[in-house]
Amino acid sequence: MFVKNRVKIRTRLYSHMHVFYQPDITLPFITLSEEESKHCVRVLRLQNGDKIFLADGNGKLATAQITDNHPKKCVLQIVSVEQFLREESSGRQYYLHIMIAPTKNMERVEWFIEKATEVGIDEITFIETENSERNKVNMDRCLKIAISAMKQSKQWYLPKINELKSLKEIIQQPPTGAKYVAWCQADKTQLFSNMLDKQEKYFTVLIGPEGDFTTQEINACLQSGFVPVSFGATILRTETAALYGVMAIKALHS
Image 1 (tube, rainbow, N blue to C red):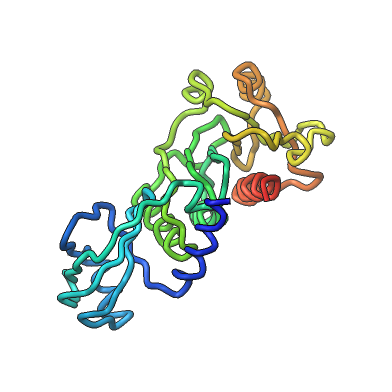
Image 2: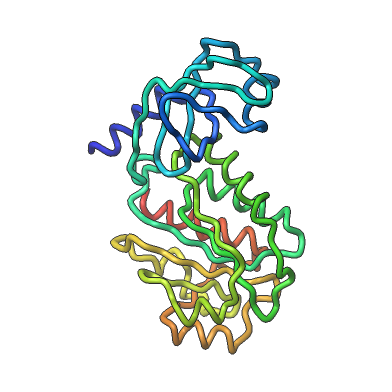
């Protein structure tokens, strides 16, 4: 009840605030990065004395007042700092990790990162499989997209985004908790939403490339404790399947 009440209060009080990303919140003064300073001063036209909010992506939210609205190095004075627990920030009582094979058109995966962050996700890992279409990912761009989505959705925890790993690496050191692998050839009775355990608090979902996982890869996943699941009768694009996984688990815990 305490967590839910604080989430409602936070949503009501902060719904119209200007939020800026500041990974290191230190007292008493902070200088925004050039990019954030430009947005604050040039775009929003905020003035000395105006108050804004800073999020460090790890649950810390600070109220700060502009003392020097320089367009390249805006200086702020910290007024107050509050630390939120992860479940307070997201309103969720579970941890969700999506492992996804990046698509040839990276814009589609970037779309997934944005939407998944808005809906609620804790960790994203890029995986390389036999049928992968891409073996390089611009991590800086992915981080920027996640930061923007975090600020827009008023969540104070930034999802962890991991570098590309081979499926073999993941199978050798499988995650704990409930583990699922989306497979186009899975029995349709194994519908993802029906296979979920509401009591589970840690979920990992493997999403393959457009060409799907190979039979050998699926067999290796099964040996490592992953459960094959179906996302329905239709064939989904990689990023659609990944968001389906996020939404299904969220619906389960709503």
